[in-house]
Image (cartoon, rainbow, N blue to C red):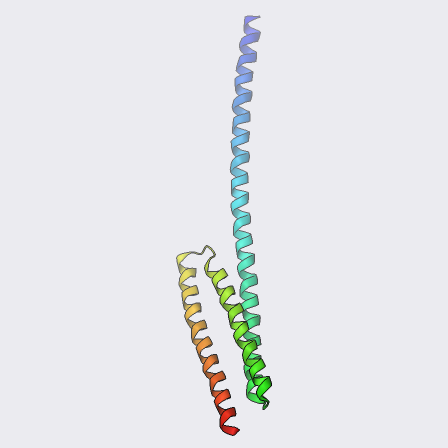
Length: 139
């Protein structure tokens, strides 16, 4: 009887140890899985933001071309408003991209991206001002 108890005790301890190992492996796998899902979701949201940013820049460019081609002051003002509201949307998208977790090399690219975006924004504003000034001179 004593040997049966010892066997049960040894097998019980072994079972508890194996259960502990299985639980720790399960916790590790869950941790890795959640980190991997976070990376994937972050990458997807960044891609969505970048695609939306690109579409918004295309809207800005198309509106600027339309401003060059139109003669109507009211349409010019509507196009100008569309450009500036789209720039506000681009600002929000860029902030969401910047708030994501990136490595240092990617962060340097984002800083360059922001500086180029600010130059683009400034040149579009100057273009809108020049178009409106030309319209005033023509009137």
